[in-house]
Length: 377
Image 1 (cartoon, helix red, strand yellow):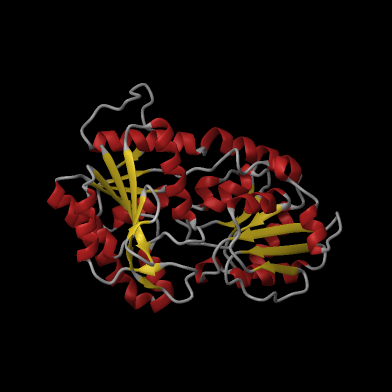
Image 2 (spheres, rainbow, N blue to C red; image 1 turned 90 degrees about the vertical axis):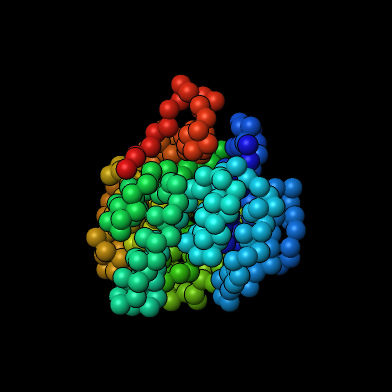
């Protein structure tokens, strides 16, 4: 039995999909008889590692290493060469179509993981008039898969509204050993020149339009000197206010874990999240968060672990942040850690996903007593 993941959402410097694929590969090696291969774009053709095969693809400007395949045929040929018994496609572009075509030729079931809200991304970049065309495209592509996994209920509902019926909710998870409150350190505050009383806010991720990083900076400006915002990630903008600092670079997961545990709260202005791994990583690190009451973030949190702003404007975000610090944030951080321990471990996520794979292959689950916790259409 051979599972092949194919996606263009795989860059040298991380991203949520890469973290999911890496964690899944590690889990499958420890717990499953499924052989796992990744097929991703790269700067050359061949085996990049023992389990990842790459094909040359066009580098996308200003994308921090992502590449866009232009031709379908080489990817179809590569999938036929790898000859998987099950295929999972992780993006809605060329490689999704390659997965469908290869599945038909190989007689292998093909799953899609709907990681990105494609119509809303198109609308945000090209205007509302482009959204219906994007919706038609999503319906055409994803109706061809044997099953479409969504990381959240809100994404499943969107696909159902578009007429894509064969779906299941498959939540992601978090590395509870890596992201942990024990990593809290005063070194970060010393590096930033902050006093012990300053409330340190952190956001880590991409500087994409839908993340509203500028609104986060303006919210910090409204809050004033008692608060300090740290932005972490590639291509972050220059600080717009004196109480904003920027680490404009990719940081490895271990360094990110220290940044999260050493802060007082995560702030996240994104209102188009399909899941929100960084929210889980923050809560696993023992800090509460401020998010926006939109997208998938509300599915991940509870009133004891987060405060949600009504919209991603500077004023609404500043109000929510101030409201968070009127509560006992240390106690909320403790609740946040317990919240993810009981609901959001990678172990639970991959156990459920593993059962889905065997179901798609028409085989009994190797752990039939552990039925998958999934929402079905």
